[in-house]
Image (cartoon, rainbow, N blue to C red; front, side, top):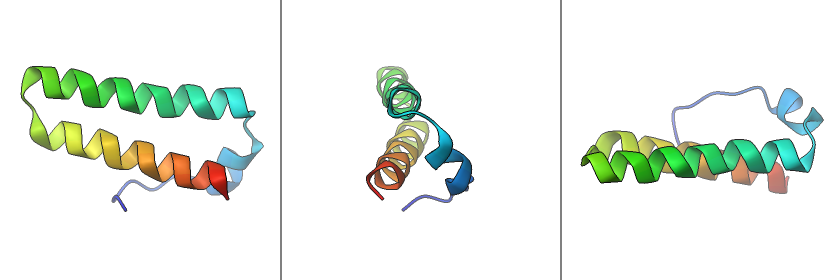
Length: 58
C-alpha cells in the first residue's frame, strides 16, 4: 500500500497493545496533517497506518 518499509518480524513480536498504539499514532498524525492542510503527509500517515493494520491482521 505505501512505500513505508518496516520489519514485519519485529512487528509480530510486539503485543497487540503496542501494535494498536503505533497504529493510533499514525491515525493521529493523519488528523494533524489534515488540520494543517498537508494532504501529502495525511495520505502517507493513513497508508502507513493501514499497512500496520494489515500486518497486525496477518
